[in-house]
Length: 220
Image (cartoon, rainbow, N blue to C red):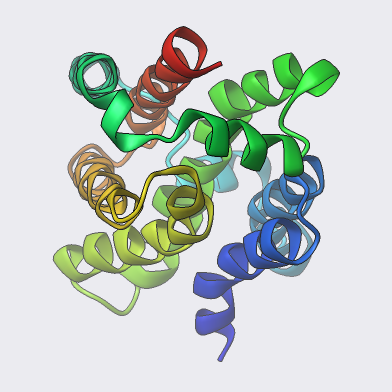
């Protein structure tokens, strides 16, 4: 029951904030609050880890090779996303409906620059910390590495159905979750092989930068 809550908690936060309350800022508080508070409470308050033990458990110690892999995979992600956006954005998005949806979620106006920065910096760090750091280690104690990578990728992808599908012209939003799942597999593999999430964070930042580049250049 506890494990199921840990796996499904982020999706519940998105469901409450985005579908329930219809606000991106509120969703960010709920979602990122969960991603940060749960590991910190469990490891520092409940299990009394030292900071060095927590860093090691979460894979926060970077290595040169791991970071290089992060830059390389992230560069591929950025280029692929931007090129696909440049070529296919007229088909993937209905611009007026997208702007209307983002405005209804308060992703506009004075908030925009801060929300973009959150997505570029906070989002990759906390998602990797939670899924490839904390949850990866929780599952690793009872599952094989391959199954851990698969499970973390599945539940990482799950809440993207709530945030991605409403932004795309039907039915493309459903298929847009598949690249998210594939990226989760790659970042999970990097975590399993390198024992660090730092490369995954770098790669994730560049992937999110590709998404925001498409939005700012072609859709804003």
